Length: 468
Image 1 (cartoon, rainbow, N blue to C red):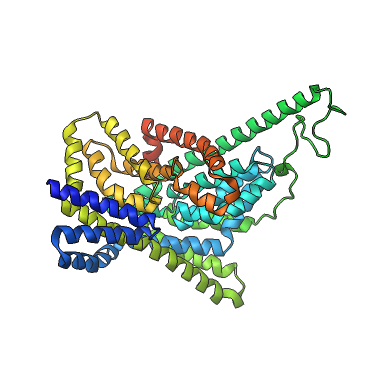
Image 2 (tube, rainbow, N blue to C red):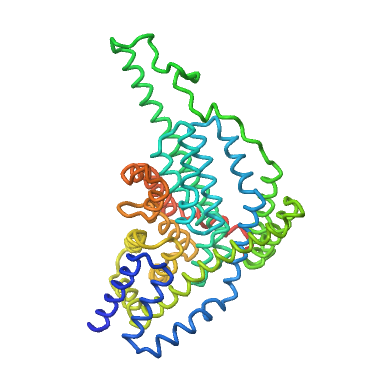
């Protein structure tokens, strides 16, 4: 790559960051920056031709039909109150556990993230609702911030995951196997997050108990109790609202129907009865039928119209990101930058795991500017060939890269989810938000380390399945 080409690449990257700084949509920022680069490299005609052809060449891929189908399936399920049924069940089951309200909110964020495919959109939507529920249950806003920001990242691994689908599209990996591979790491992440919440709540209770004992020793203390006016648990600690709030009405049929949709879509992939695209259509049809069953006939038309409108909006947002990333990636290929980076890394002849860690670390700064979908569309075409060239298995790499890409959204100093949460809950303050996020970052590091040390966590379900 010549000095002139290098200057153009740097200028285009600066332009891209500048467009993001003025809050232009990421898809348009990628497209405009890529077009400027193509103009500088090949002229206006080439840029216009690329902008005209890229949307068709991107959208014409048959495998992409899975995206609107999975989105429609999720929207139908939400409109049929199936996600609410799952959340209510989690609230009831976890009510007596330390931090039960926070763990239930975590499950709600995970369900919403799986529907939208966007961590940022999940945080923006769930921030106020989840924060109010967690604070009302007697926990601090710092815990609420950590739960909401980290919970938004769950949808990238637990199928149906739009981000894993896009990774499969841009890297030519099996989408069905990627979706199945996300199950183990997704559940591991949920359990690790839940354990983190329980430990945080227990530590907070222990600090309060110590403070209460200290107050009893003070001469000014009267009555020997620091919990006047409130109930207490068997161990003498103040009872939280988790243990005092009325039980939510359970919708067991909704929970069972949610399981039916999961089995129809993901189960058919596992058994080899359908391809990923076919399974998505089966899931969407099942969710549509369930919506009709659970909606009164006079409201059928309105429910369908609202569901389709929402699904079209989410699909359009996803494809806009793809179009912009397609133009930008074409510019990088045209300039030779992507090939130069791949060749330079492979020629360095470093230890494979050193290269893996360095590539994963490169994703963290991207979380300052891009959401998960955008990161995968920009970074996966570059990182995948480098790491496959070092002998790593493609499906395992896909899950690991997607996991770290979403982790970047909650990593200080500029984790995007933290700033989105701050905009929705301004009284939290960025300082408290980041302090609440830190324990979940530690949990993520533990999960990533386990995925690297024990690859079978990712690969054992796809290997057992008959996925096409």
